[in-house]
Image (cartoon, rainbow, N blue to C red):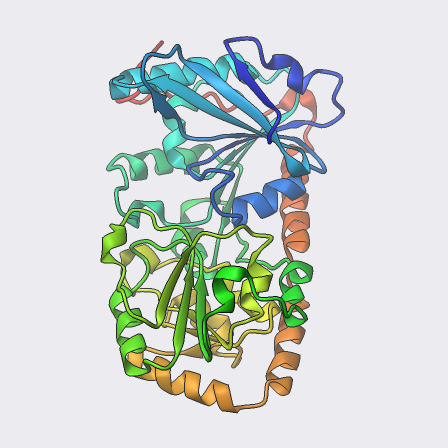
Length: 405
C-alpha cells in the first residue's frame, strides 16, 4: 500500500517544506507511474537522490466529487500526484481546474530552486503561468504520431521547445529529427539496469503461468498496442506450430479481441518489473515484432538492452534505433517478415551463445541508467549554476485555447 494523502488546495505544501536541502523537480507525465517501469521511472527514481521528485500525472474522472489532488508516496523517494476531477467537465474546465490544483500544490512562483521536467507537451496548457529555474523536455517518443494524439500537441511542443533550457531525446533517430529545433538537444538512448536483468541468466524457477508452456519459447514483453504487428506474430506462430510464443504486457489502445488466438500463442498479461527476469530466464529467443508505421518511426525500445542483459538472443523488425547500433554490431538479428523471423530463430536455436554473449557484455558495459542520469544531471547543474539574481523565469504565454482563470 502507498501512503496516500488526498489534498484540497494549500493542504499539500508542507510535504516539500523549506527545510528540505534538495531542490524540487516536478515532472509532468502522460504515463502512469504504476503502469510499466520504463524510462521515466528509471531516471526519476535516480533523480530523487538529488531532488524532491514530484510526478504529476494526467487526471482521472469520477462522478459527483469535488476536484482535488490525490497524492501518494512511492519507493525511491518519488511522490505521485493525480488530479481527481468531476466527470462531465468541458475541456476548458478540465484545464482551468488542473491549473488551480497544481498552483495550489507547488505555488506559482519559484520561491525556492525548482526544475520542471516535461514528458508531455500537453501539460503546457495548464502550467504556462508557473515559474521554474530550469525547464527540461525529455522527448522519449514522438507522441504526435501515436494513436489518439491531440491535434494541439505539435503546437504545444513548439512552445515547449521555445522555453526549454535542455531537450533530451529517447533515441538517435529522434535526436536527428529534433536537433535543429533547439540550441541544446542531447541524445540519451535507452539504457540498462544490468544487475536486474542479468538475474535471468541464473534463474531456473519458472513462474507458475509459464511453467506449463513447452519449448522452444519465443518471448515478448512490453506494452501491446498499435506498435505491435499482430499479423506478423500470427503468421510466425502458424509457420511453426510446435514453437511457443509467450507474450507479456498490458493491452492498451487496441481491442483485446484483435489479438491473434493460437494454441501456441500465450497472452499472459502484464507483469511487474521485478518479475520479468524470471520469465526471460525461460525463453530461448526474444522477439520484438514491431510494426513499421508512424508510431514506431522514432522509437528506441528499452527492452533491447534488457533482453541482451538477460542473455536472451533477440530478433527484431528493422526499427531504426535497433538496426543501429544493435543490428550493425551483430547483437540483434533483424527480420523483415515472419519467414525471416523463423529462419533467424532456427539459426539462434542451434548456435553457441558464448561468443555472442561476450560481445553483448562488452557493449552493455558502456551504458547504464546510472550513467545516463549522471550525464543529464551534469547538464542540469550547468544550466542552473547561474546566480539566484539571474534566475531564468519561465512564465509562458497563454494560448488562445487555454482558458484564463
